[in-house]
Image 1 (cartoon, rainbow, N blue to C red):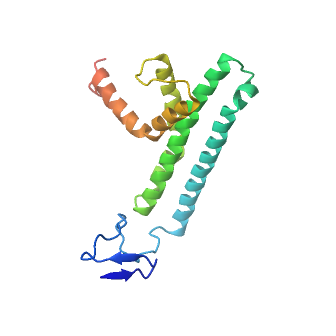
Image 2: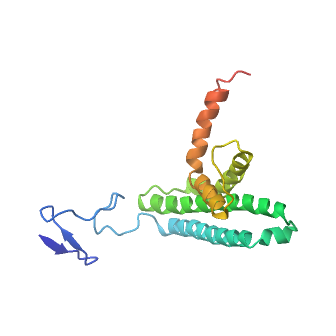
Image 3: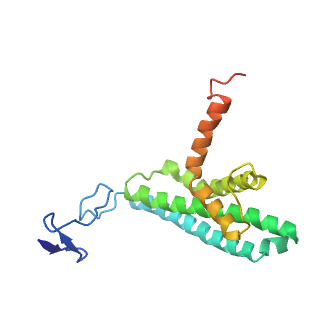
Length: 192
């Protein structure tokens, strides 16, 4: 038997009619719309969101400025060195882009699911910066040939690799920490 949703007018079906719409996984029942956070917290969440949107916009501008050789011109770098500078900047801004999109996704998930807390604010503000830094540092590993990531010289490729490094930087750093523990010994168990 079909019915119309009183809130959205969407058609839903009972189990006998076929599959139901996917429900939210935030632990709330249909019709529970009251915010779980007080207004003071929402101001903090909006400031964090505004910061992330501003960093996103600035990152897009910086990618375009790099693509048009803006940074090279301002710094007086020309020829092959300009291409190298742009390549590393593409990695950097690709990483920032990955970090800021990860931060945006984390912010809306943490708020919707009730996991947001004040103590994670510093982490959220630093994610784009750290992600860009990891992508920039990783670019040297890639460009030196120490990694198995091939590069073909396309600008979009540098941004894409930087983005992937930035978006998954939390997982990558955790894995690198495990590798370091194996190679150098776990903290507290290292031989001096």
